Image 1 (tube, helix red, strand yellow):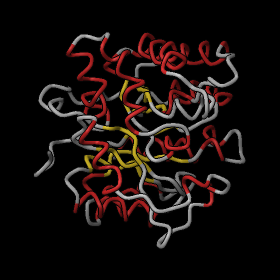
Image 2 (image 1 turned 90 degrees about the vertical axis):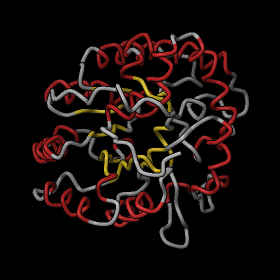
Image 3 (image 1 turned 30 degrees about the vertical axis):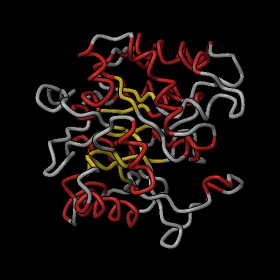
Length: 296
């Protein structure tokens, strides 16, 4: 695998590695059906006060729908907003022109902010999508472009993810939401075993994100999340773990401040260097995010 850049000079500011924005006047979000809290538009202006209160100095914007147009819009936003450190967009990796799609995305406004690609694997009808030869060729194109690939999955997909990560050591992968541990059910045995197997592969990092929505939305506690976060850190280490809020999806179960507060006791148990890695250094290294002019 090609190693991510050193965390050296780029770890000075904290970074939320998983934020979404959308404008319903521009593009529907059909996945929010039945989720009243999310059935409105969300902008960077909406989350900026929470980011400041949590000491965050930047965000990685992550795609929501399979749309090249949405990716272009996020990149244009990155060009206009120094707060956006990077974008995880979407291209159709099942097509033979994946490399050309990536080049097209990078040639537009804000294209240099493209840091990764993602597909909604948790919603993909084909359970073997990641194993398709053309998709694997698309993943190699992602790696050749110097980008990472985010994995948003259901827990049962972890074995296929591990096989894919093992088969493509040249690709930098990022596991979103810690592989969605079934916290609400209380049975984490399969998840812990599969996550341990995945963590043994050096070309995958993980996000401490999306955990509040995997717990019971009405009754979750920080103590319930803590052993999950500690297990993730134990398996991946701080240099392969990054904090993300999953805002505004987290609002289904918790405010931004509550998500940050739930992670605080775990992060407080790390050394300053380890804490800095999880709060920004790992994301900046893994996504190869350079400093952006005007960033604050």
